[in-house]
Amino acid sequence: MGDIGRIFGGATYDLVLLVLAFTMIVIPLAVLTPIHECMTDRQKVSVLLANSLNLKQAITERIQATHTLSHAGSGLTITPNNHISDGLVTADGTIVIASNDPPAVIILTPALHGTEVRWQCQGFPRAHVPFMCRVSAVAATPPE
Image 1 (cartoon, rainbow, N blue to C red):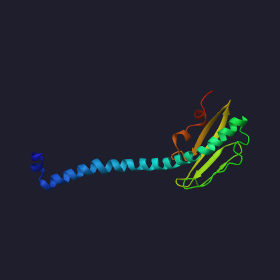
Image 2 (cartoon, rainbow, N blue to C red; image 1 turned 45 degrees about the vertical axis):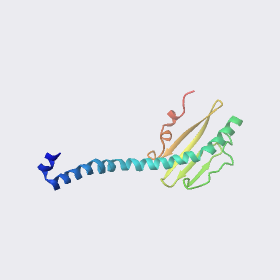
Image 3 (tube, one colour; image 1 turned 90 degrees about the vertical axis):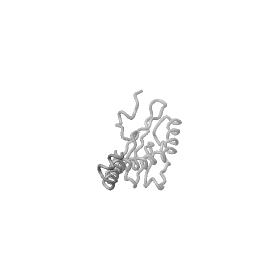
C-alpha cells in the first residue's frame, strides 16, 4: 500500500478511500431502503391477521358444531385498536378488517369442506398484504 500512497499522494489517497467507502456503504443502503419500507407495511398488515385469530377460532368452532356457515358470525364484532381502523363480521362468518396505516383491507372467508373449515384470505392493495392473501382464490383452497 505504500506504493499507492506515494503514487496518489496523501490527500488524494484519502479521497479515493472515502469514495470507495461511500460506494460500498451508502449505495446499497439506498437500494435496500424502499424494500424495507414495503416490508414494514406488509408487517403492519400482518398484524391484522394476528388480531383476527380469536374471531377465526370462534367462527370455526361454531361451524364445526352446527355443520353450516349460517349464523357462524352472528353477534361477533371487531373492536378498533392501534392496528385496526374498522371491520365487521358477516352472518356467514366472513371477516373484513381495515387498516389506515397503511391503507389496506383483509377479507377472511370460511368454507366448509366436509367437516373441515378452510379459510381463504384476500387483501388489497396486493403490495401491502402477506403472501397468503395475494394467492388467487383457486390456489388458496387445496383440492379435496
